[in-house]
Length: 578
Ligand code: ARG
Image 1 (cartoon, rainbow, N blue to C red):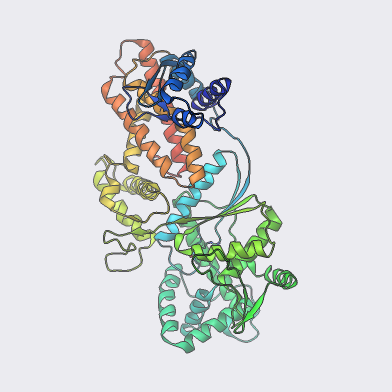
Image 2 (image 1 turned 30 degrees about the horizontal axis):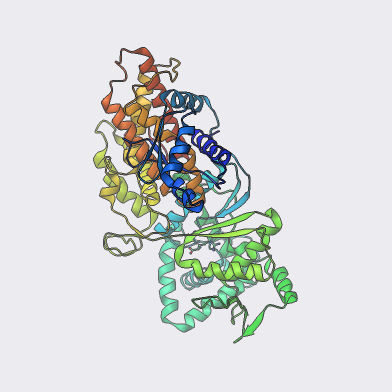
């Protein structure tokens, strides 16, 4: 078991033996290492509760903690802090175990979790918001898997709403003679569709502008959306063909990002479920009519801000975004019966999910045994503090962003990487750079994307971690394949690395419970900084003391393995060189 946890449990037992019941003991890295490496701060509260003198109590407990051979020093400071210093031998032993261990994740429970992330919209540009969802969702999925959960990732395409009607109307206006617009059309797909994905992406803003400016055009777009939802053969075939074009492009982009989905479901998959669900909702008697629309009231007396009713069927008979999400819950419950469903979506959609979650509970589609969680994220902004745009003010597409960061990356790469290799490696680094930056703050905060800052190999950045990882790998290679063990420490910067390693499991657990990857990027940064200090302080490959040298190589292997594992969770690839 995790070393730190073991010590915490042991201290808990000691407290219990002394008649103090505490829920848990948490050792935190000490702010003042000269007094101790870790601290236990729980004594003060305990003394207060039992009306005892905290310093006396701390001293009494500290005396008993000295029995543990894992502690080299136990002391009391201030009003009753207990400071602990670990013995080198205990750290060496634990590190050795970790290095040999194949599977070093503690798997406590296994829940079935569906993660809804990505959420790209068919026929629309993949922009930086979708990038955040893909990055965060993929990493959370990998983290949950490492911790033993059974996870299903679903891309949940936006493939059903008004945007489809708009784009199809624009296609019809441009190409009225296409086969699918003729009467009695019966084919699966449109063979004569003269359109690429780039065309689609250009079409949408034009179509949307036209519809917004002219109510008649909007009406036509709504009508096409309605016909599509009614399975009109021509529009359905056109829809299928648009899906093919768009999906091919999306899959390419996701592959580049090392993002993969178990399910490629979308809003349109709700179609087959809606009639059954409507019947059920009718029986439940919770649907209301309002100005020609069908709604479900979801407001609660306790609401501080008004939560409007969920719009189930619009007055023009089309299905809303809320309905497709409600139906998707219905289907996920029926097929997978998950313990949890997570939605990794822009935080500005929180109200939508509040409505959907409440409706699903109110209608008993889900009971309390399935937890729904909205994992909202903030906006990636430009230096002006506004949502990130291209230089000429357009939507920052994922491709644009990638190009921009690639250019910046190339400035810092060694000259000997040339031609095609330079292209490939700069792309791998650029993606790592973007992801690392994306994870740096708590997911819910907005942040400013500053390419120069995020590419700086000396900063808290992806390139810094990648560079340090590559250097470790090269040291391991230079040291040859000899077997190394943890046997001896100098007790200076090398001990600091081993102490940092103790936090690994906690970092994963904290990251999992906050559903935010910043805990992992933070940890990677600290671990690598501490390792790099150790690296520059010692001449590992020319060290004469063999036991020390062996330990240092083993230590490098262990940190390298941790970097590999954490970067794998973040879905960041390690280039061969940079
Ligand atoms: N397609 C949506 C958008 O671009 C995101 C989908 C999020 N997932 C969901 N189940 N609604 O805004």
